[in-house]
Length: 387
Image (tube, rainbow, N blue to C red; front, side, top):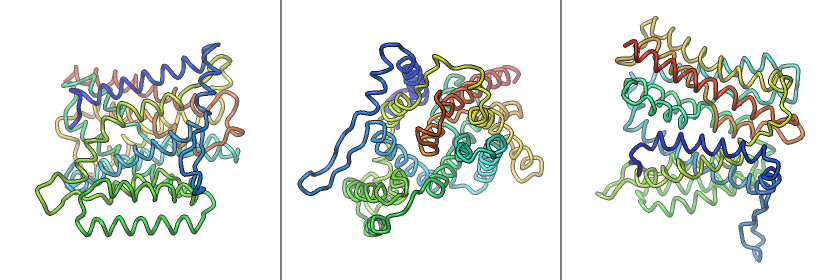
C-alpha cells in the first residue's frame, strides 16, 4: 500500500500546489515566457541510425507518455477491483455504475446545449464528463472520520466507472486517421501479452517491454497512445501459480507513489497554467467556458444524485450504509471536480487555433472544479455535524 501515511491527502495537496504554481508562472511578467518555453522544449527519444526516433515537445511527452503510465495504473486498479475489490460484488456495482452514467450524460447535455451552434467548440462535449478522484479523495481525507467509509467506497467505485467511460470516449471519439500497419503491430503486441498471461509469465519487465512497443505503435496508428496503458493494465496477471507476489499487485504498488507524487502534479503544472491577466466577464460567459463550468458544477451533481435517487427510491439499490441523503448529495457535488481527466480531454478536443485567446477551456475546468470542491466540502462538513 502507499508509502505515505495519508497518500490521498498528500496527492490532493500536491495537485493543488502544482496548479497554483502553474497559475503563478502563467501570469508572472518574467516567468511567463520561461513557462511557455519549458512546455515547448523538444525532446527526441529513439535510435538515429535505425531511423526510429520520436521528437515531441515536453508538453506532449507528458500528455502522451507519462499519462500512459497514469492510465496503466487505472487499468491495474480496474482489474483488481473487478476481481477482488469493490466491483467484485454485483450487488455493489449497480448504484455507482448508474450514478456514473448520470454523471456522464448531464454534463455532456449541458455543454452541447450551449455550444451546438459552434462546430469548433462543440467538439469539447466530453471535457466535463470525468471526475478527478485524486482531488475528491483528498477532500474526503480532510474530513477524515466525519465521512462514512461506505460513501468513500461509493465515490471510488463511481470514479472507476467514470474513468472507464472517459477511456471509451477517448478511444472512440478522439481517434484520428488510422494507420493500419501500426494498428496491426499493436494487435500483435496485444496477442503476445495475452499469450504471456496464459503462459503464467510473472516477470513484469517482459510485459512492460511489449507494452512500450504497443504504445509506440498506437501512437503512430492514430488511436490515442494512452489507451496502451489501460490495455496493458488489464492484461497483466492478478493471480499466478506460485507463492510469488502477483505481478499486478507488485506493479500497482510500485506505480502509486510515482503517479500520485510526480506524474499527476507534473501534468497539472504544464496544463493548468491560464493567463488571467486580461480575463474579463466575456471570457466567463463564453459558451465554451460556461459549458464546461456548468457541466462540471451542475451537470455532475444533477446526474449523479438524480440517477442515484431514482435507483434507491425504486428499491433497485440502497443508500450506502451510514450515509444520509445530504451526504450523498455532497458526494455528488464533489464529482464536479473534473480537473486531471478534463484537462487531458481538453488537450485532445481543441488545437491552439480553436480555443480562444484566454484558454477558455482551462478557465471553465478550473472554475467548475473549484466551486464544486469548495461547496461539496462544506455540504459534507455540515451534513456530518448534523449527524
